[in-house]
Length: 461
Image (tube, rainbow, N blue to C red):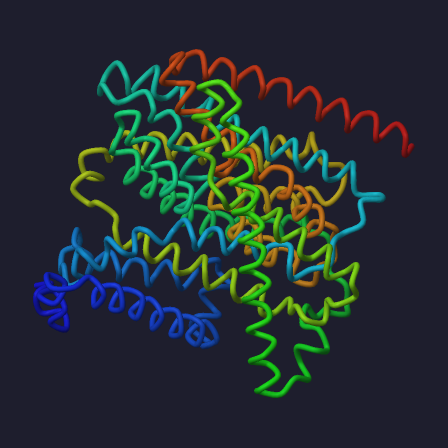
């Protein structure tokens, strides 16, 4: 049926350019419709319940994709789309720090430290849970690849973008199924983070776990955003795209510096650096550009509204392109391992949300833990979405704490250094050794967090 799709299938045999235009053109149309559709009442009601409209569009993309029941989308179009998750995720992280003021560290170091410790615990714990499930059940009974012990962290923490990046590493290590399994786990994580997370927010309101909201709403749209006319708004939009692109360029420059330095390192270090993605460094680029704008007093050139919209749209398109390419036959074959790993990962993240957070956080435990639950189950965008549901008026300090924490943790987990090292470690030293190492790290993080919390409580008493 893909032959009927605008007749572009035959043109591809002559020239690849029509397919490129068709692929990007379709994605552009989808992006415009998403941006407009998100403002409709029905879409806004779904978002309030934690169901992103991109998830519904992605489901449609899956149905008409090459592996779906209708198979209307040409496979070559999908092949072009499958190259986009990495640049889209990079753009998401390039906007994270640009649109909001750099928080002052004074008075925030202890909350940031405890937030970072919980994030690290959830990330390393996902490797522990995945390793235990694979070692005790999946490996002896189903004979799966030991690298499946990484799938929870890649899919939940890293999401579709990290799954796309790590897919190449998995393929080189003899586990080509890792790409599609990572996408499947990321989709489960996104669904779980939105549906379970929004349900947790409802429970939080019922049991009084949320901090009471201020009477006065803090509007996140600046005066500049509201007063500009159409032409000036368009110029401001171009400025914001340019700043986001500049943050990406800074990230690319840092990545090239890292790769250049790998020439003087050992073989294992070189493998890690060569597999390291650009998007954590784009977050640093975002911070750097924001810092320069604040020091030069030019922050009026950047809009919190536009940066947020660019980030949301990039996340939506990332989800749609990844879901459209889900390999259904492969997922049917792996339904049992994926189900067991997903259930184990969700139980662990819920434990972090409802149990460990009480030990780690002294104040605003629910808002801070719901953001971390979303981040650890469905990436940073889900964490911010759930935080917006729990704290719509920015009454708490969670947003600046979460943002600063991301700056330190993103280069490690969610597609960062630890995510890259994990499959290399397992291939060289075995899954059991990696699981034991992550277990020791997790116990140490608990001890440090409880000690820090005890010291802080005594100091403030």
